[in-house]
Length: 170
Image (tube, helix red, strand yellow):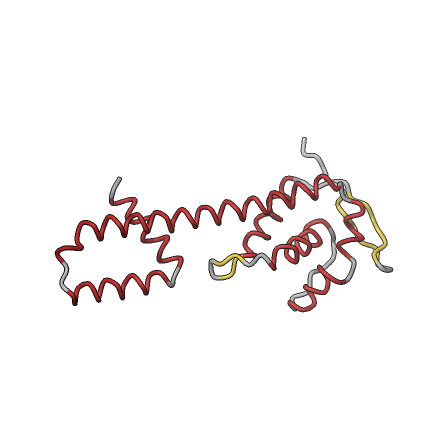
């Protein structure tokens, strides 16, 4: 039997808003995934987005409030309007805390994984250079340094190179 979320109708600055007082597993997963995705831009984590996105997605998933498309309006809604504070009065604070920790943990796992990719790449480069370093002439060395420099500026290329190296040596 599927349990239905408890909903309470709450006055939020003169508007009636349906607020889920319990956070379902589906909502938890959606919020964690949404916060995680929104805090990374082009593969880079932006900590300044965390609180903003957490609040915005709590409002989105736990209420019937329509989220505006305009980023400035979203920012105002989540950080300055008082809506988040008002609706979270009706949500179990332990659940909100656990949800915030889950979002933070998901981001930490991704960052550690990205760091592991860097470590794998540097290990691969070290082995590669050890094997071929003596056989390269100055022109070959210049080309290799340029190729490595281009790769180092793109974290996705680093992760791909580390993954391919790992596959080659398995």
